[in-house]
Image (cartoon, rainbow, N blue to C red; front, side, top):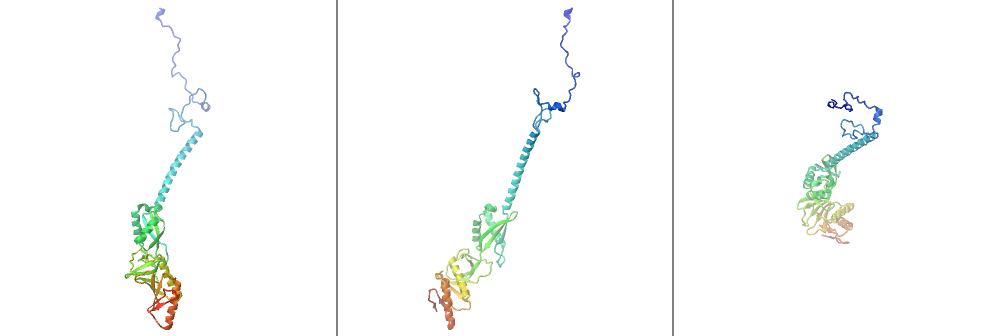
Length: 313
């Protein structure tokens, strides 16, 4: 009968979950001993990745401070890029010319100026050269040349400067006449460089030059050399110091090397040559006219082109 019974085993019964004691919560002292030999580290040192069922409480203060410094550096870099882009955009807006403002540098101008005429000319130039709307890329030399061609009374462009957002102020220099130049009953004015123009914003010059030489004139072209205009200016100044006022200067037919002047309250026309010093000729003119006035004679002309001699008729 003994073989019908199973042999009693000495194997202990399985543990029952109900009979197991509850796991105690680790105390602060036990948490400090987590990092010991033969123990498994749980958790994660990343603020973004977490171990399952564990909090990320293993990040040290030094690691956390390093992470915050890295984030501050990234935010600062992005902010710097944004601010740099805003400053660059603002600078480009201050350099861009969407509207033209014209002013004149000389305050001695006695006549009103129609600035819309010059604004339109500058707008036309900027329309043909779009890159010039950025003030730093503008070629002022080319703009000055263009303005002098379409508006000969413009001598040059002094400077450009910021006026308001999208607006640039162009400061122009206007030619100042030293003499009036009349050709074929049409009135021109001539500046100290000998350039002829029609619009004069200053007072009328005292000297009126009448051109009978037959040389064709185109507005904006050089009709006289600096030497010739300087000669006319010297004759006017020296004649005034000698008691005579020059009212008109005439270029005779077929020559540009001679000059005939008319004096106020004096009948004879005086013939001069630009190849002889102005001072000597004015001195000879003064002596010759004094001689005729003293004798009560009034010849048609007095020629002092030859040194030491005076011809009259």
